[in-house]
Length: 171
View 1 (cartoon, rainbow, N blue to C red):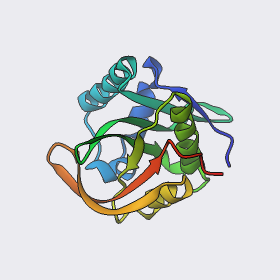
View 2: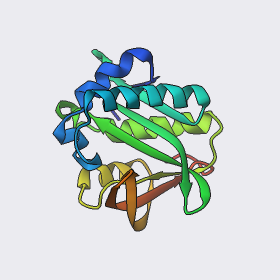
View 3: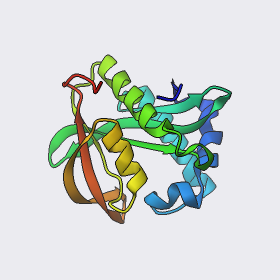
View 4: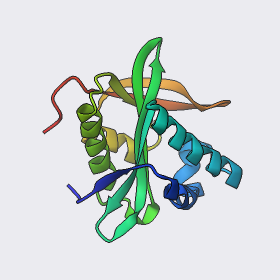
């Protein structure tokens, strides 16, 4: 597993969002955002972290304290039941090195340590083999396909993956 650290989202992580706001990294979410949308997302991450309704992290690897991606989880309604949802993004030049699955595993461990017991879902598009592989490598179980609204007005065909935080972590 790559040597990674997760740092809680902070005021100075706005630049990481700007670096991740590319067609390649945002295509799964409807494309890049404008500057106002990026700033609003950054402020939302900070606010939700303060409120305890979400936990977003900067992914740090040796030699890159500025971060090479982000991973997080937040409260989610899954078919009328309380759950958590997770998501991640790793900058293009750092993909293919096992950083995303390692970061998701560390994030799940952090959630367990924080006392989270709700199931954690992830919704990669069905045509995104890399993110589906991250789910598999991080110990998620595939529930099936689902039409999922990733943001208002944008419904994608996704795979619904879940991991049970109440179960022992994957070895």
